[in-house]
Image (cartoon, rainbow, N blue to C red; front, side, top):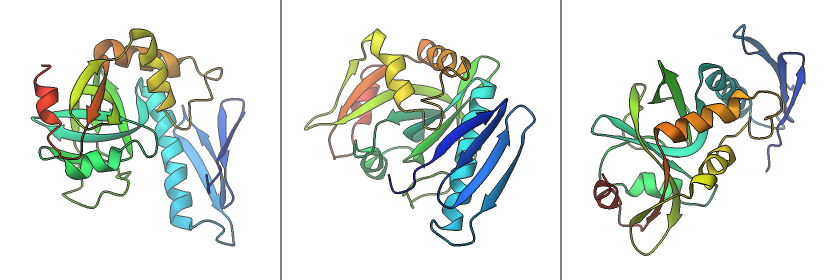
Length: 215
């Protein structure tokens, strides 16, 4: 990682820093402060964005949701999430999709309103440059962990793997389970409402056919 990020705590105040910045976040009070380094070891725009990503991840936990390392697309009024580590094909899936609109090909915010989960547009679109920026919110359709394949197919995720897969896709909070029990309970609730599946997809952009056949 060319931009190592460290997270610590002073009571309920979250401390975050990297080469180019240091900041604090009071999550419950919705307050924070960021100081940028004088020398641009890291671009100041990147520093501000990464600080805001951390803020967003922890506010999501506070609200009962999560910020996930996932591509997301809206189709027929619902938001679909496609989880995967770097290199798994999130950007490829988003760019080749023949249907729907791309919300992000990198990070996706899942918010919770009255017990229901929604995908929300954010400025964190990743590398995707096409289409209009989406700022709306949409009910979650389905969750998938993605794998590149020669053909498109959906298979169930073993139940005892789902929450672990979701946790692995939760940056900035994944190693903070002892700090806040809601991290895990939020992901369990998300999987209970929208069970995670595995999507094997090719590069033709017609993976939606496989998704539609399971509904």
